[in-house]
Image 1: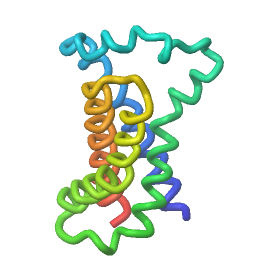
Image 2 (image 1 turned 180 degrees about the vertical axis):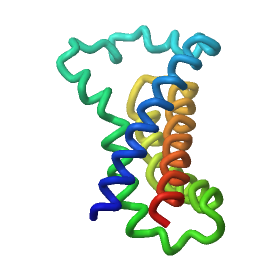
Image 3 (image 1 turned 180 degrees about the horizontal axis):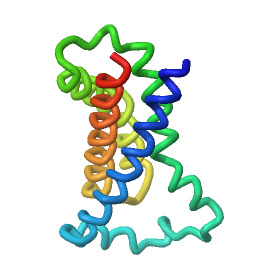
Length: 135
C-alpha cells in the first residue's frame, strides 16, 4: 500500500505540473479551442475550485491503485509498459465517458477530443512513472 500511495502522490505532483504547463501552452498556441468555454455551462462560482486543482492527485492515486492491480499484465521495458497502461485506461475508462458526455451535453467535438487527448497524456505519463518506480 505504501508504494501505491508514494507513486500516486509523486505522479500527482508531476501530473499537476504537466497539466498546468500543458494548459498554459494550449491556451497560448491553440486559443481557438478555448473559445467554446465562454459558455454558462462552464461558469463556476468558485466554491468548487479546489476540486479542479486536486484532480491530478485524484486521478493519479486511482491510476496507481489500478497499476498495482494490473501491472503484471504489461510486458516490456518501463516506457512500453507505461504507454500500454495509458492506452488501456484511455480506451476502457475515458472513451466511454467522453462518448456519454458528448451525447448528453451541448459541447463540441473539439472539446471532447481535447479532453480525451488530455486524459490519454495524463494516463500515459502516470503509467510511465508507475512502471519506473513500482515495477
